[in-house]
Image (cartoon, rainbow, N blue to C red; front, side, top):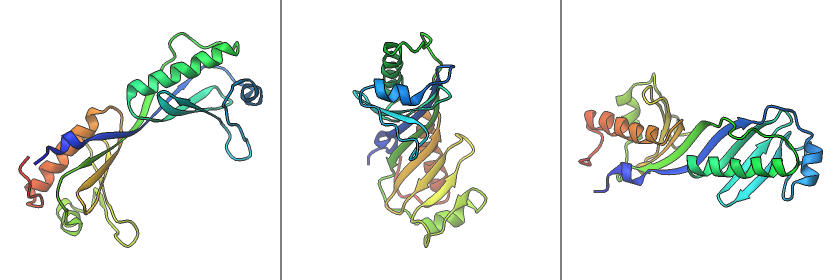
Length: 189
């Protein structure tokens, strides 16, 4: 059986940074090729990079949020492209602005079907939300690592709230351990 940790896949990395000064987004939008800016729809300017693929949300305050990247390296590479584009527009940007990962969303597969009703009872209600009429997944809030895992009857997982890729591995370990202790997992990992 495949080790569930080998199935972990980063789906999205969200990070934030800033250039420490206010921007005239209308002016930036006119000069930055490929920028989308419609303040009636969204207060920030959207600039998409293709390689690596991501979107930078640039706000008037100078704050920038990068989303859609598939790795922390891609976040840094994408934001470096954005910084260079802003520098080309004569907007001063520090050589190495601080970039903070806010959220890493990963998926994984336990490789077997799960009885979510039994899991909800077994794990106890203090860390669990499970309302199958509202949402087909069970929401499991872990303390360590501090992430939220969505468990689905198919055995698939979505782990969100991680700050580093290893948080997903730790979460999968905790989930396997807890479900095994409860006798709710057949696999031998």
